[in-house]
Length: 145
Image (tube, rainbow, N blue to C red; front, side):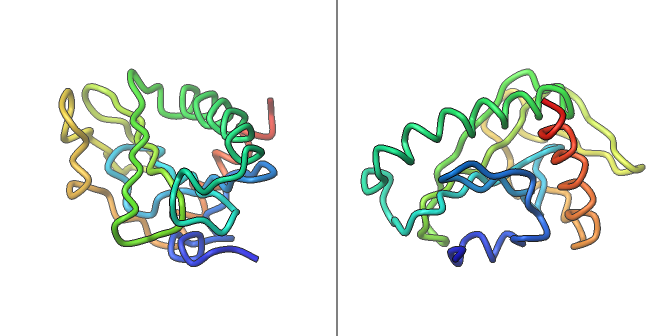
C-alpha cells in the first residue's frame, strides 16, 4: 500500500523506479528539469523512525537517482530537500542544479535559483501527461543500467 505523499505526487503514473523501501517519482512541479521526489514506502513521519533496512536501501536509491539525473539533466550539483511540512511521510525533493536552462519537448527549464538555493516557486507545472512521459523517459534510463 502506498502512502498519501506518494499518491499526492502522482503515484503510480509518475513512477520512475523503486527499490525495496523507496519510490522515485517525477515531481509534477519542476523547479529544474528532472526534479524528483524520493519517498520512503515505510509508514514513518520522522527520518529517525525509519528502519535500518530503509536507511541501507536509501544508498541504492540515491545512486540510481544520481546516475539517471546525471545522464538526463546533466546536473552540476544536486540538492536533496526534506521538506515534510505539508506531506508528513518521509520524503526528499531531489532538485538537479545547473547554470542556465535545460530544454525538453520545446519547454525551457531554467534553474531560477542558481547558484543559490533552489527557487521552488519558479517551477514548470507539468500536466499529468507530461509528468507521465518524463517518468517513462527516466524509467528507461534507470532500467538500462
